[in-house]
Length: 284
Length: 268
Ligand SMILES: Nc1ncnc2c1ncn2[C@@H]1O[C@H](COP(=O)(O)OP(=O)(O)OP(=O)(O)O)[C@@H](O)[C@H]1O
Ligand SMILES: [Mg+2]
Image (cartoon, rainbow over all chains, first blue to last red; front, side):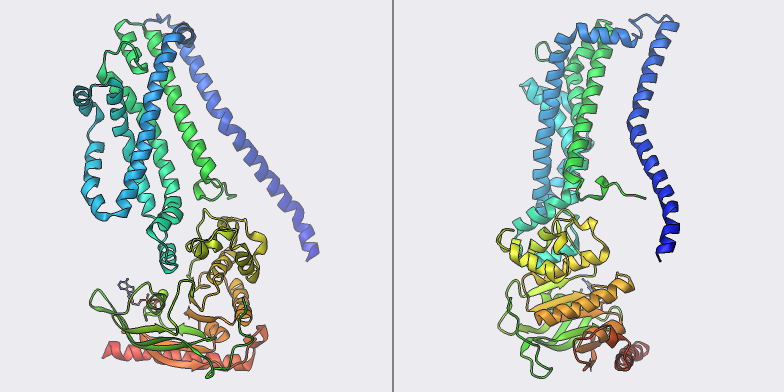
């Protein structure tokens, strides 16, 4: 037995090493590749502008955009804060409302039958088409923006969480029944943990959507004055043909989206990495 | 944690549970069980053996109280309280987000006991199945056999009067299955517990049980009962003995008779 083991040992080692190297390569590539591609794209953008002598009121180069970002930082950062505030508030309300409603849905089938269609109608009607009405009926501009963003963001959380709460293992459900679990115990110890990965998937989508909702609503709202967000600054800069500032504001919106998505992904990983298949790296 | 010193021989055991004239009809026309009678005594190790669809799982679900019989009665001697019953399914049925000890804690947790309060009981149950070192592990870190052991520990932890097992080892490989069969018998020696064990395997039922209840299908009913009078403890030696082979033949004949009974009715 020991002889075969010794004969085998180097072969296994070789393969293990190769596997470890491949793992390491992939780990590095995961970060390096996107960075290289983005850097390359920015470089190309710059070259295209320079080589073709494109004036910066048509297509500003990356350098000009960066300059504008720094020069207009005072105005842009306050606009960013406004957009961020609306986005995060909408997301927070979407989480509370979506999860709350999902729990109510699973507690009563009749409640679900009655109100699920409403949720669907809200979801399938494009927010751009409801927004003007909302701005007519809701006096407070901030509240109206928040409402628009919320309408877009809450549905993925509601539908994912509902699906998750209903996805409990039927044998576990039986076991809870045999041990005489109360509704509340079943919800807390069985349904909510089962729904967690589904909810987090919904959260990732909702994070992006709440930003979209906030931006779209602001476009519809139009004139702003004080307390204007990034979308309004883009519109305003567009009227003044201040293209570099449009790009700078756009950059901030994109960055915000990336940050929200990353934060949601990190949260998801932190909560699931110990047990959920999606977060487990397997050797295969 | 003070079980009786030994299991009395069959015929001298106190009654635990009685199923009398139990019918179960699904959707008004699927007769899953027809006039089933079964008396379970304390210390019995009963195997339910029968073809697929003969109502074995249905019988367990009725006993566990998950369903009510359409007619007939199931009565527990001295009534049934929560914690009187332990259940093991074909899959380990563990909560993947909870550690091994938290999974075993479940029956107590649902009765409002904190993990600290029942730490001793949990460790005792994990010890019984040989997993005391894995209390903080997550189910995904365990092998299929180990997960099944956790599931058994969870069923044992309340020291139930009756343990129901529905094809618990059917999804495991032969080697693990033999090991778990041996361990299950050892547990039973130690705890003097009463078990109803559903299986498709004649060999498994003979090795484990002292009573084999053979069931027939369409409608599901008890066809015959085979008594396995080989003494416990049974070890690997028993598996290769002539007694074992003879008992397997007897059980196998009974099973075939039950299946032909069904065939006769189906062709009639
Ligand atoms: N919830 C249900 N609704 C309708 N019919 C059912 C239900 N549960 C079981 N049955 C029917 O009752 C009969 C017995 O089913 P049961 O699951 O008890 O069989 P079984 O002996 O456990 O079979 P197997 O060995 O395949 O697990 C089957 O014909 C099945 O189709
Ligand atoms: Mg079954």
